[in-house]
Image (cartoon, rainbow, N blue to C red):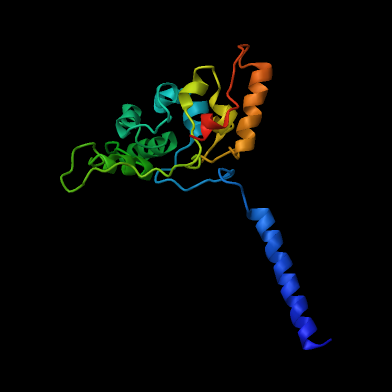
Length: 215
């Protein structure tokens, strides 16, 4: 086969492979389903929401009162974690070692809690440390609409839309991820379904006007 023909064939195969890759990986704006970034603290929604039964609004108080659900301030975390500094098993292991060695039990602080304490300028004993500069925890935002789309939690929470409707079974997540595409099509489909069937037995009029979301 002539070299020119071989070259054209190779280019065609490469172009086809590129097209397939684009079709598989290319997404519409807002479709970040599956996005699961690593966070500065390994936070488990399963532990806090399912095992400990902490209500979503305890940490995300803005979901009912503001456009954004928001992230809890470190002092909200400290309501519990000034007392809980490590997993239960780690504390039990230290108690067992202390009993075996005939000494006092030491305070065990996990790496995650140490990050939380340092963010507030505290040492492991929760004392202010002048060598540590307090700074907010740099959480990585998981769910974010494109700049050209407007979303307000208040309008949805007022009619009883559950967190899971948009965020998936977040109470089971070991690491927070974007569960759904949150594309325009999925939002419009949800509005139409809500208008037909209502929400929690209540009739609603979810807007289908373009300007409601594209302002």
